[in-house]
Amino acid sequence: MQAYPLTLVNHLKRARAFFPHKQIVSKLKAGVFRYTYRDFTGRVAQLADALRALGIAEGDRVGTLAWNSYRHLELYYAVPCMGAVLHTANLRLPRDQIAYIINHAEDKILFLDEDVLPLVEGLSLTSVRNFVVMLSDPNAAMPKSSLVPAHNYEDLLRNSSADFEFPELDEHMPAGICYTSGTTGEPKGVVYSHRGLSLHSLALCLPDTFALSERDTVMPIVSMFHVNAWGMPYAATMIGAKQVYAGPHPDCKTFAELIQKERVTLTSAVPSVWIAMLAELERAHYDISSLRTIASGGSAVPPSLIAAYERKFGVPIVHAWGMTEISPLATVSRLTTAMENWSEENKLRQRAKQGLLIPGLEMSVVDGQGREVPWDGRQSGELLIRGPWVADGYYKGQQFTDGWLHTGDVVTVDEHGFMQIVDRTKDLIKSGGEWISSVTLENTIMAHPKVLEAAVIAVAHERWQERPLACVVPKPEFRDMITKEEILEMLRSQFPEWWLPDEIVFIEEVPKTSVGKFDKKVLRERFKDIRLDE
Ligand code: ADP
Image 1 (cartoon, helix red, strand yellow):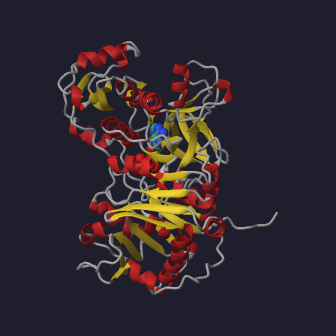
Image 2: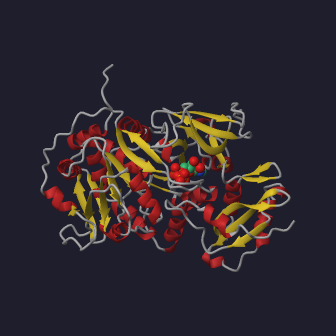
Image 3: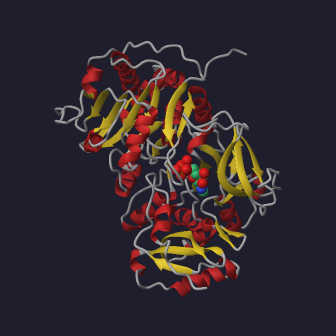
């Protein structure tokens, strides 16, 4: 067979040749902006030309601090296709971490959305030589700023050629870099190759993963600064789907309106977004009947949430698991034919698992001694993964020498091959030598009709080493109308006594990380001195 390189340039060529009239829609401050794949591919070439004129060479890192929009998509292609490396920096990280990752990646140029300007002005950046501002009103004048030199994105494009010839690239060349969001530690850089992103895009389109098709209208709610918005923009462009982006500071109302107006068929976000969206969809009436799939990942989706969307809107939440280190997709939970005749309850339980490994990857589950754990749905071990879109180490950091990514996730696998996360190693509650899964407890608590969110954390305990503490957010209409005893009563019917939280505290909101996951680090710090009864 031919050693034909798998590069993102192929996506661009295909999009230009076959889907020139398909639309890319972005909600901006000034209103909805709409253009075609033809316009898009032309501007990508101009942007690549502009990058070269600014001295960007093969392998240079190009940083972005930007929301989900068509310009970010232009950068997704122009940067890697001209041979450079796209570093999508997470604008929701604390300032010192943003500066850290930009300096660590040695970004030579930084593209930023206009509203991020004040944030960037306060950063101490050591490698950036040029700033490019993406104004919300493309025709407005550049605002005054301390960033020098600062260019206007649209001016750069206007002065560049759409005849830019993309160079021949090796498929193993780096195309992008993304830092982990640091839920359990300092951010670490993961480098994606053209080959990895190309294969990952194909995998997203398989029918038992997300079945992306030209017929779809895809709206990634996941930020484009977090693991390439789960690779959806790449897969959507490759396949020629209509794309919708919600722009700066998006909220649930914007998402719901865009789904209704643009007839979105596939959308993706972390469960905390789906919890908030449910409240919005119940507050006002929207027509979301166009949706065929809601992709949920990043943290465990409570079965009660899957059931609520199914019952109220007839829309399936499809649960997926992944990591920054895996580009990110690795498993998807879709029922197989063997499960067709199961009871509704069992089907729901199965769908709430993290699911089946997608084709192309290999997994192994091992105990503390590195021995394979049997697939019996009960015994757990650490999940290891390898495959063509799995990182082989961190940028300027640790390399994975045994050929496997050690995920740090403790899992079981059932006899059908469905993987279920018991917990992250760091979130497991180690009580008297036994493990309690914080995820299982919080999912059960979130099924209580008066509960909006729940996070369970370990608190140090003299006798048992650690004990569970449940932090519970009541639904607004049940504030002060829910008791600890009610929650314990429900848990008692499902768990042994020693699993029950020693204390339940009612809080206003579960703090979230920069990508919307429950931030247990903050809760652990807040409640570290809480006294639990002996
Ligand atoms: P961070 O490590 O900063 O949270 P990632 O987005 O890379 O950034 O997180 C990957 C981790 O998120 C996984 O190792 C796992 O613990 C958790 N995770 C991802 N998807 C799921 C899911 N569907 N269910 C439970 N946990 C998940």
